[in-house]
Image 1 (spheres, protein in one colour):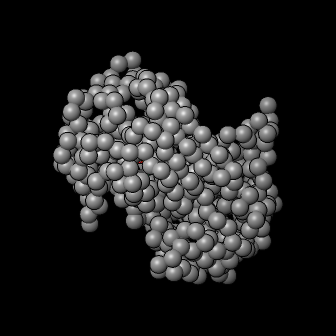
Image 2 (cartoon, protein in one colour):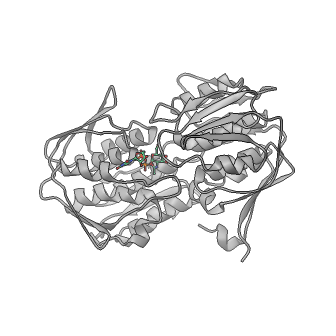
Image 3 (tube, rainbow, N blue to C red):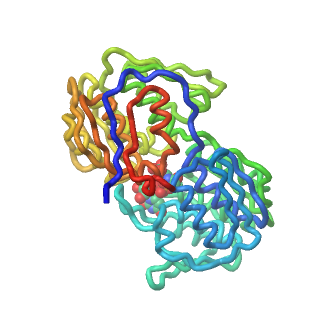
Length: 431
Ligand code: UD1
C-alpha cells in the first residue's frame, strides 16, 4: 500500500495572518479531567487531531458519552455512566497522555487498573514521579500482568517535592489532590501554560488551588467537583512556534492574532537574537514576526517552562541549518530527542552530535530536497520546515505523527503561501 508523505517545495517568504488552533497538550488533560465530576461538561477550542480522538476513545471505553463537533472544535462529555473498567495496554499505548487518566479515576473511584503507557521514540518516559508521589497521598501501587493496580482508601493531602518538574506528574497529582482530605503542596511543580490552563478549569469545577511563586502549587481538597458548563482551551503555543519559525526560515512576515507572547517568551527572544523582528503587545494576544536577510546562529538549552520548550527544539534546529555561524543546541528534557539532526543532514545540513544530547550546527548556504522521515510530532514538523528552504522537493514520511499533533497545519501554511501538501490515501488521513 502507498505510504503517506508530506511533499514540500521551496517556498517564497510566507505572508499573512492565521489563527492558531487550541492546545493539544492542554486539551488532552482537560478532557480527561472531566472524569473528576459526574455530569455533562462542555469544551471549546479543542483541536481535531488524532491524539484528541484517542483520548475520546479512552473516555468512551470507560462509558462516557463523548461527542466531538469537529467543525466547531466543540466537545461535550457526559460522565454519568462512567465505570471503573481495567484499561488494557492497547488503549493506554495509543498516546502517552493516557496516563493522565490515573489521577481522575483514583479521585472518583478510589482505584484504577491500567496498562503501562510505555516509552516512545524520544525516550523511556517512566512514570515514577507520578506513582511515588501519589503514594505520599495514600495511594498503594502494585503490578500484575504488566498492568498497574493503584488504589486508595482515603486520599490525604501531602507535602510533595518533585525531583523534576514533570508536566504529567504535576497534572496527575494536581487532579488527585482536588478531592484529597486536607492540603497538598507541590514544590518544584511544572508551571507550563497547559498546567495553568488545567488549574483554571479545575477552579471552575470547584477546586481550591493557588499557584505560588517559585513553582509551588497549593491545593486544598474539596468534597467534590462539579462538571464545567463551558470552558475554552488556550491556543497551542507549539503550533504557534512552528508557524513563526516557518515565517522566519523563509524570510516572511506573518501575524498570529490569538496567541499571547508570554507562552513563548524564550523562543521569541531566540528568534530576535537570530535577527528577526518580533512585535507584540505586552497585554494583548497577537505576535508578528518579520524576516531578515541573513539569520545569525544562536545557542540554547531546552528546559521546563519558562525555558526553551523541548517541543520547539526540533523546529528551531531547522531554522538554524542555514543561519550564519555555529549554533549549539542542548536537549535536557528528553534523552533521545536529536534524531531529526541526521534527517536534516540528508538535506545537506552540517550537524554534529556532541555526546548524546548536544548538537553543533554549522550554518550552510543552502540545502537540497530529499526523502526524509520524522519519528515524532515535532521531528516531522522540523523536517517540513526545513523543506521550505530546500531546493527542489522534500518528501517527509511520518504523516501519522503530523496528524497526531496538528490540526490542518499544512492548510495554514498554504494560506500563508507555503507549498506543503499531504500526499496520502484518504483512508490514511481520516482521524
Ligand atoms: C509533556 C508534554 C510533552 C512535552 C513534555 C515536556 C503532554 C501530553 N505532553 O509530556 O509534549 O514535551 O511535557 O514539556 O502534555 N520523567 C520521569 N519520571 C516521571 C515523569 C517524567 O523521569 O514520572 C521524565 C521524562 O522521562 C522526561 C522528563 O521527565 O525526560 C519530562 O517529562 P514530563 O514533563 O513528564 O513530560 P510529559 O508530561 O510526558
